[in-house]
Length: 185
Image (cartoon, rainbow, N blue to C red; front, side, top):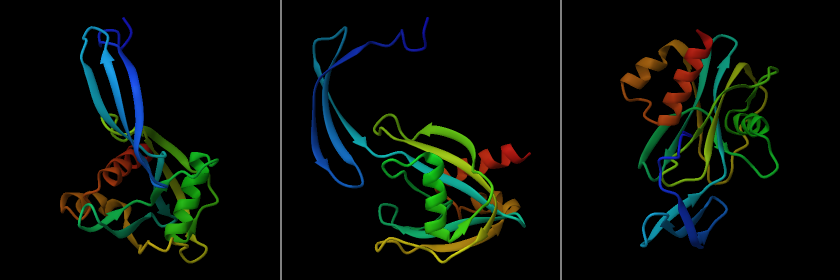
């Protein structure tokens, strides 16, 4: 039996956009389950795929960015991340995002750690996580007008303490750290 054979199939009746923005879209779908006659409505958030990276310098310092996140109503320490631009590969996207947010780059190719659905219950996008080794500063930040990002460095070995002390609470940063730790061990 295939993985999803036990699930009821559904047939989409209609899709309509509630709104579209440069950041993402909200779509309302109506569908029927194969074995039921009622119409079900579902709201789907369409976003471009996101990339993030654990970025380590030659002396094993991890680069984190601190920025205010309005929905979270606080400042958050995170690994560098962002959306993939149209026509850009995931690798190109993370190299660009790291350079823009931190001013750092590496001569080594980013190492793919994983590709995960962000929240398949409501969103269409994935987050693709990389490890970047031997990063070094090459320029100043190149931030968008609405970004205020501070670059911070910590010993990679201090990350678990930052997580335990709730100084890092962003889930993508926590999962990226543990993926990198596993890869490096």
